[in-house]
View 1 (cartoon, rainbow, N blue to C red):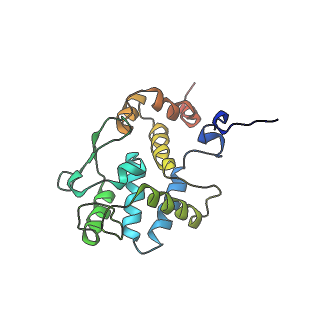
View 2 (cartoon, rainbow, N blue to C red; view 1 turned 45 degrees about the vertical axis):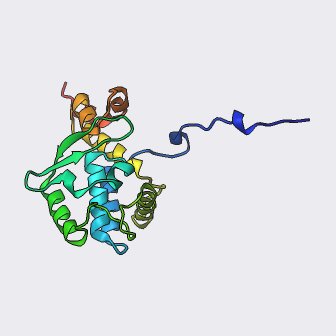
View 3 (tube, rainbow, N blue to C red; view 1 turned 30 degrees about the vertical axis):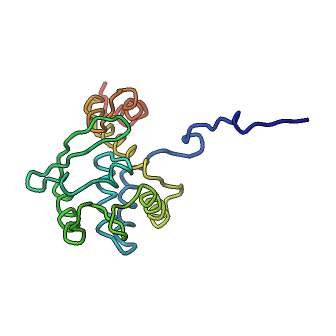
Length: 194
């Protein structure tokens, strides 16, 4: 008699099942353009994707952002990291402040990204939004929220930022989590002069 056990099955890493784990800057722009031109909440959706990308936010971190974390006059965002990561304060760029000001008009409640039920958007809601925007942007692969976090790390590495600075920005406690962004950055070597 042949016996198989489901408990013996070990699923591989997500990266084994996906063609890529990050988005390029161009793909991010296409994703944000799709968010701005879809659905009932274009300002909310655009702001959500922009902040997730620029600040390396996880879906759960973005979902729970409250207006008291945004210091508009100082141009700062207090980020409460989850999963044992280090929280921090990030500066906001002028375009981020502009979309946040527009968002505040349509979402004046407690949360930056409200749901239609009066609470905040959920991680699952963000996953659906990101997936749909990826389809509308005609990206040739499935897009998931954590790709925006990775896009942030790779973007910073491509800009030549130091690994320790990227670690601090992303809230990583262990630099090994940050090294993935600099290890694959072949573009940096094109600038070497001999």
